[in-house]
Length: 65
Image 1 (cartoon, helix red, strand yellow):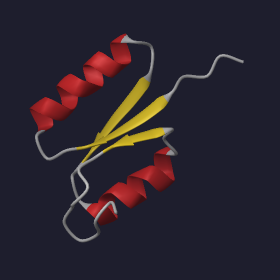
Image 2 (image 1 turned 45 degrees about the vertical axis):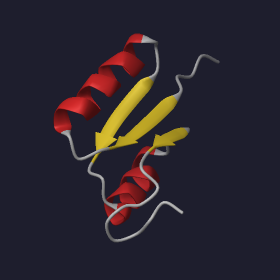
Image 3 (image 1 turned 60 degrees about the horizontal axis):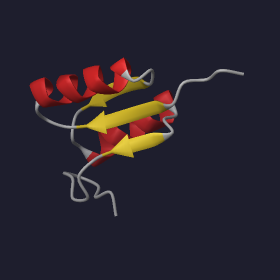
């Protein structure tokens, strides 16, 4: 079984998020970017089922804590 590690990045800067995604993809992992908003992050995480989430601790609407 050869499954890729899935990474979800929560960031408001489209350019920064896409740059991070490109680097992660270049290492053979799958990366997705979503807006830096707690509610949206939870929805994306539920849909994508990532292995890792990269996010700030404090987010609008729902904090990551």
